[in-house]
Length: 617
Image (tube, rainbow, N blue to C red; front, side, top):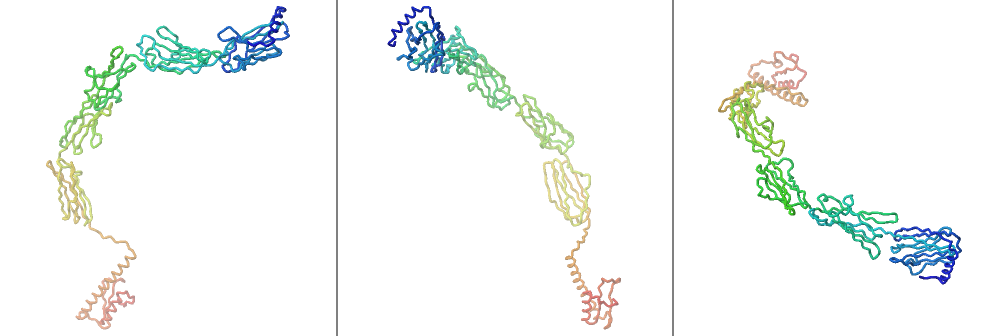
């Protein structure tokens, strides 16, 4: 410990003052503790009050050495000087200042270290006015790192007799030592004999920090398979106590199987023949035990399966029955069984009566039936040519006609299982004599002479009829079309109308004959006058003129011939009139002359329409 040169003098004066002024005293006030975070600034106040005014005051600060009762001075000061002792842990990090009106001092420690957590003593000497001493405990805090939890990766069996290690928790680099608490879900765990053990390991690092490791040993139960475990670290700070929680973990709990459930995974709904069925088995144990499948009536025969799945392909009704899924616990050797009823629904092919085909005579009746054996309720509908003609498994055909003939299809369906359906059919044949529409009424028509008329005839019958024609009144006729279907024959003849015609269509088969008659009245053709047009009028006039010239030439030749024979007396200048009984202005007048040239001239004048016609004409 270092002392100034006049230390002995001061000690001597102190002793003297104590002896002379035993009644003088000083009151000291210091905080019991000062709390500060690591690395922060720490202020430790020291306040004093003298009963008498001192002539001089000497202040000294001491610190207790760690792990011993000895003290070390770190500061000295009086009215003339302030000295920070060299060679201590606080050299260069402390300052002392006056508080208020010289009634106290403040020790300031910069960059507080973990080793600074000690007792600090403030010693005040007022010589004859008295002396005193107080102390403050400096507490240093540093929060730990976030807690790290790690669970056991392997499964933990509920059959273990003692608590098993399930997780560990670590809180590093804290000062002072932190505490660790375990939680299951939101409830803290308290050590309980035979159920819960907590093993704690505290390590003081070379740096002075504490590291705490905690191990939780727990006797697990089946209910813990969904539980969440966590740890919480609590640590001290200047303001009090704080906590930090770890993440939550889930542990793997192994427990035996007590219940097995067997169900149909696919298909959804009812099962029909031909489906592929998938059965799934699941137990409540962990890990899942191996499963074996069998039918209840064949327990010794194991069915081939893949893990927890049994696949039945293209099932038939014989695959119906009770299926079982069994497991054997390897720890307890107990066997657990689950089962289910599997029903395979079916619909047999439709059976139709009469079978294939049936022959009816016209006017007869028939009842057809359609049945299909099924495990479910069915519905039957009858169709003909795509049109619905009946419902129910019976079809009534009464007073059969040729329209009754054809193929009847019955469709059997299961409403509760749409994929299940079947069908059957019967072919109805109706026999009878040929039948023609309106055969009892004669077909009458009027047609112009010279035209060709088509007469058609269609006859329905079974067996198929043949058609022949009888035509009177025309020699010009021919069959232009003949066509036969399953139930009818069609024939078309083309007849030329030359006069009134009567035709007969005769349809014949092995059962009878039907005749249909046609009557055609011939109408003479009438030439209609074409509408007048200027171009056509000019052409007609020219033709008429040419014809008139030819007629006049012929008439002239005849008259000339008769004149030569002396049959017609005629003078040189005389004129002979040739007229009609009732002449009019449009009649042609011919003038006869003995001179040939004169006669020709007269003819030309008449043809050309000369207006200077002799008055006697």
